[in-house]
Amino acid sequence: MKPLLEVRALTIDVPKGEGWMRVVDGVDFSIGAGERVALVGESGSGKSMTARALMRLDDALRIGGAIRFAGEEVLGCTEAEMRALRGSGIGMVFQDPMASLDPFMRVGDQVAEVLRIRGVGRAEAHARAVAILAELGVRDAASRSGAYPHEFSGGMRQRVVLAMALVAGPKLLVADEPTTALDARIQQQVLDLIDDAAADRGLGVLLITHNLGIVAGFADRVLVMYSGRIVEEGPVEQIFAAPAHPYTRGLIAAVPRADMRVDRLPPIDGAPPSPARRPSGCAFHPRCPVRLPVCVMTAPQLRPSGGGSVACHLAAAEEAMA
Ligand code: SF4
Image (cartoon, rainbow, N blue to C red; front, side, top):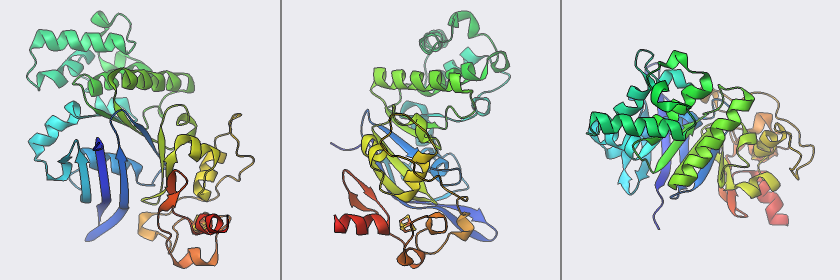
């Protein structure tokens, strides 16, 4: 069966001075219908750029490679086709709900507007907006739909944004750090809502996060991104039980959890490199506690490992000796 989303050799360049700077460099992944995939990495790894490229949200980006959604090449779509795809094919939730909401428009109207621009009549659009707000936990949704965004809490605003993302019946939800701006208690509520809404609708989900801690109970598969490349990917159980890449191990070490079988891994020192100053060889080598001489000069390629794949010279050597 064809995947719902297929990304091949994705490159993303951003304008820099007179030229271009590569921020995503040869990324491959796919998401099946109803599958949940987490794209994980520190800030600056390129994961949010990847999400923006999928939706073609930023005209300033130069995007290469292939992005196929339900068999259609997204990079070849006209702007009108992209408008139809956003919402009906792919819904999106961002970190800051206020950035997605019009402060001067009632929240019910904002949700209904997603349907209105698709030709749904006013009364039906409003009824469906109220229904989805109620489903997503907005109490007394019929009257609260007449409120403005500033009258809602952060968690409630994110429910409104989620309603806008889902109301037109997409097949894939891209959620870019959807809980990061919320306090811990509300974070779990919003994640549970996404979980339930995706399960009810059989949605594929691409969850983008810097926090591996929220991934374990949510995703089927994990992609770990560093400096614009996927450095490890695999089933969620494998990633947590036996991470092969030192960066993945460091991310896991930053999330203390009683149920993890990986003991006392060192956290990662230092910061990710700027794309303008990507190190030679393995981009993680300046921070890697177990680097080898070869790591400084030669970039490791992603190769199969267990049920997933990893790009690391040491992991390859260890596997060869096992
Ligand atoms: Fe560390 Fe080398 Fe593996 Fe990179 S390739 S993560 S530097 S061991």
